[in-house]
Length: 427
Ligand code: SF4
Ligand code: SF4
Ligand code: SF4
Ligand code: FES
Image 1 (cartoon, helix red, strand yellow):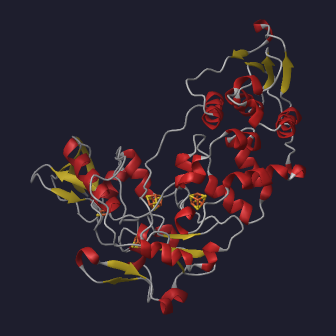
Image 2 (image 1 turned 180 degrees about the vertical axis):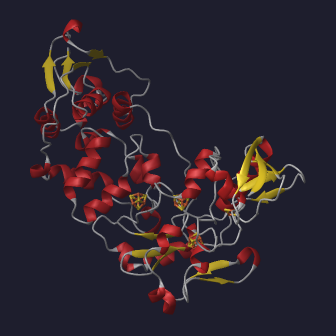
Image 3 (image 1 turned 180 degrees about the horizontal axis):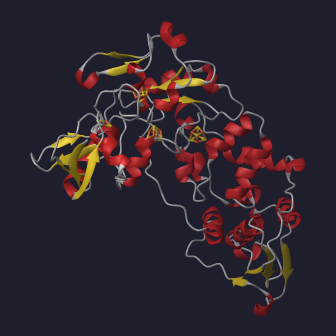
């Protein structure tokens, strides 16, 4: 046993433990990217930095062994700044989108890339649920939204933008899927006043949570009195989409106001925006609470060589939707994104380098891919594969590569070690 002090607390380090292991076992939180439990590793990322109080040095906790009397600080401003700097440097050489631009441009935060993937795989029912969970009356909203998603679509840089609205309409047109089973009730009744997209979305999500929901529309017509150009919303589509809500059990009561004493809650949705998709998002927030906004890596337009490479990529360019699937397959599991969010990084302060090509995906097996532009060169895949991944070149231009002839030596478990979305299994 070795006695050390972490953040002014005396703790005992076990034989052979590194500082990060002692600290984590004792409940201190330290991030790490190039270290992963018992896997072979060498320190490189420096996000596990801590400060040695005796020497004043910032040291990597993943490779440093505790010594008797050591005083370690894991949370001072100096330590936090050092980790933030390391994360920003990694992100400056990261040419990738966490979320696709079509999603960040969508005022409703619609996960278009995921919808397109489901659509291309023929998983229409899942695609439609995703769509409706975001844009409560999706086909109608397509007619009254100006589609910033299509204007920003990266595919437009290579050939033509994905027809996102047409895909949504095609999904809603699969009428046999426009049936949502009635969610079980929780015995509580809620009144929602008005029927703009925010009110409809709140009603939809509250019904999904089990509330009995009554929508009161004193103006006598659903949605239309609340939108700028009601003639843009086709009547038969609106009727179809409202019918889905009715099948779920939402009741529409026209030309009346609720009697407050008959309800557990009376909701009058109010917000500043008039944008229909944004209203739908606000309605979901009203029912479910607001999501926190994570860090989002992104880059500007494709370079000429990226365009050329993508135009020749038959696998990507021939799917039904035409989508490049710009979002990252690891967007919910990536540690780099998680730490960047935790350390409050909005974007790297350092100019992006252009050493990598975005969306260049190397197939490792039928279901596993490697994307160099998301690789932070931590080396975990190199040290933990035999005749597999390897380093190429040195210094700033150093890259991790997988020679084609080595691909058959790679097991899918290696994906679990990769701290980013560089090495992943596709759904
Ligand atoms: S690897 Fe992580 S940080 Fe990079 S694009 Fe994917 S989720 Fe975002
Ligand atoms: S190619 Fe697909 S994921 Fe990329 S911006 Fe266009 S619709 Fe979105
Ligand atoms: S691909 Fe390998 S070197 Fe790159 S981030 Fe993933 S594990 Fe690290
Ligand atoms: S240097 Fe310690 S986790 Fe990367």
